[in-house]
Length: 375
Figure 1: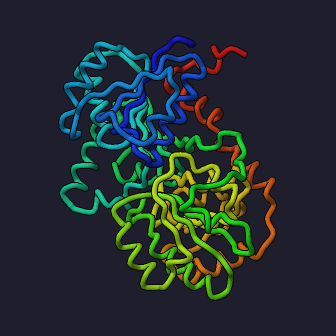
Figure 2: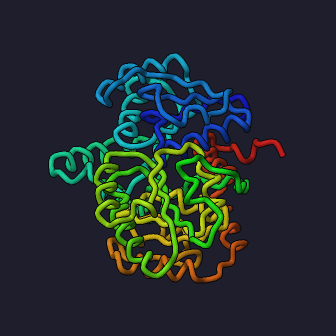
């Protein structure tokens, strides 16, 4: 199967969870000797430099999804990929339509990265009906439909009216098998990372409402009454101003830092005593595995759908109710004051290794990959 061409299709390479998954998969495919095209609507994003140089980035020049179909059909006819991995509605259904209209024979695997019943995009009735209808009509035309957790798979089947058991679960490829180094961090993170008695609480994610960093900040304000701690939130987004106002109102300016987006978060986990995920919902929750791989304890909301699965019902971290500030603060305190089996956390992360998950995808994209793969 070496030399086969695989295309990954996504909007762009901005710093989101789905985009990081695509970078990891594309690099793993290229390392296996495949010809890899990263097909994007727009050639932009902070994660572009992380792509293996062997990967060809194809810019469709489509400013909106409604402009995607003609250039995607032209790409399929010109490049003739053996398989396409399409990510995120509406690109998933547009790729199914483009393959059908172009007449190009290639394997098509589509991946949804969110729990659609809880999606902000599907809150309006008309939009919800359009999303559900397009999924019901076009997703079954793919060779395989994938969701990134069991909960997200079951939700997608119910949301889109797909047959029970028709959506496969493949967890996100997150663990690289490398340890973080206790290296100096940028100056705007120096106080958090500095040596001293304080505990270092870390959160990572786009600053948007679904991540509910407001609840985390409020919980941290309670934690500060009991534990000497600092909070670092890595990410950028539309909620920055509102979150900063909350930090100021709670008098946490000298204890909470939001330095912005960081392409490689691995060194930050090496300094952290605790990773907190406070989301309302997640398809998977990559940051949990990133923390586990570095042996960092995790406290997470028990949100639909990924955290309970990656933490194995709380065996590898603490789960608290969504939006419960008091419970979140208490769990953070308990974790920071407890001892942890760091080796067990690291071992759990390897269940989500890039190599293992890349092989699962290749089994769908290029049937017989495992049988034909060199020893």
